Image (cartoon, rainbow, N blue to C red; front, side):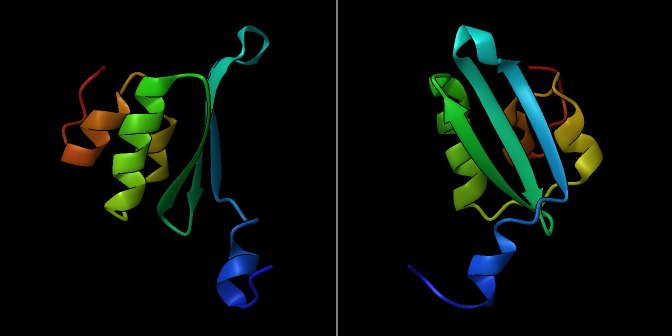
Length: 84
């Protein structure tokens, strides 16, 4: 198991947003950790692909933007805050 300060920080989330419907087994949990994005996707492929782009780009998002579930993840990566 990895050791070090970065490994401990992963369990501290500044913001957690649930998108989707867990009983239907299709949902995404989006986390904001020190301004950076992390995701757990359960079945929504679109969220996985778009969220991966956010993670790979080391995107830093404001919690207000992340909490607005009307904005598609792909629009957060480009800076276009438009409903998805």
